[in-house]
Image (cartoon, rainbow, N blue to C red; front, top):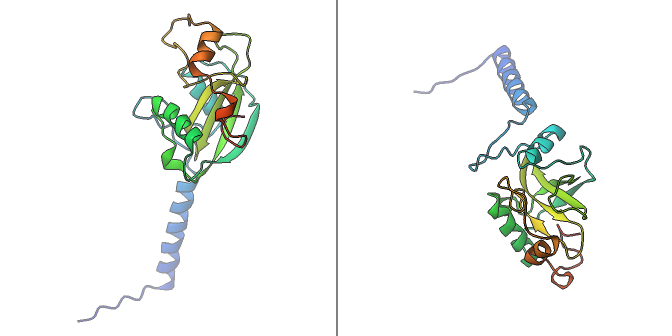
Amino acid sequence: MVLSVHPGKKRMIALVAAVVVLTAALLCMPHRQVESETGINRAGATADQRLAFLAQFGWEVEADPMEIREIVIPEKFDEVYTRYNALQKEQGMDLLPYAGKTCKQWIYKVLNYPVSGEEVRAVMLVYEGQVIGGDISSVALDGFMVTFQGPDREGQESTESAEDEKEAVAVTDAEIPEEAWPID
């Protein structure tokens, strides 16, 4: 027994049109705000979402980013990326699933870092509208780099001096190849 179905042109056109409409609707949907298993809202598709992401950790930043660029997360992590990814894992993120992918890097000037006197930046890595990594860091060569939670962000002021903090997380110039990212 052989069954043969010959849909009419109208049915075929209607089916194709329905698939096109459904696909367009899915593509046009705004990125939803996704919370990670740590309860952190990682939405970062819009300027407001990126500012809200940083605000949930208590950071006040200039609304306009200092810099925006596309970066490629390397397929294979060298020592610098391995250490940077360890920092990401401390804050419940992991760059390994994004190896080889191109993402956007947004850099904002932090206005309320507890240790004054240095330029401090919030660096965010955003892939498909979601924050996948980043840090709070100083621009000084002997500076620091911490998670988005920052130093002692449990509602208390930091008691460490700037020098103690730098010493704790200092990265020497000799350890970093000139072409390394995310260190400038």
